[in-house]
Length: 155
Image (tube, rainbow, N blue to C red; front, side, top):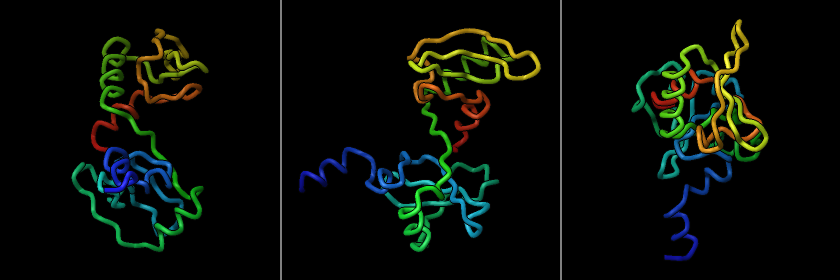
């Protein structure tokens, strides 16, 4: 095996780097013929799709339409990436929901410290977390707690 093949074996497929997505991260494509579908790159590097309204996490089909693949490689602005939440992020969100059931969002400041807030009618701050909580939330970003919890269902 070459050094490149060994590196690829340990890391994500090259197509993930090209498309700037993680393995199994869901994304959609901003084209009429792709409406209604969610895509992902599987661990073996194959592009897969399923209907957006599918609730089954095992409902993925390998995609053989190379014209779409060529277009998204050459026009990355067509890719609409969904946040990729890790299992530990979902665990953190569950704990936050248990402690503060009225909280709706997590906000990360510029250095990554998190604040738990309610963006509803109350606009209230519930608490602050360090940089080690919800690690996939990048500094300066905001995430809905419901969105993180929904990702546990396979999206």
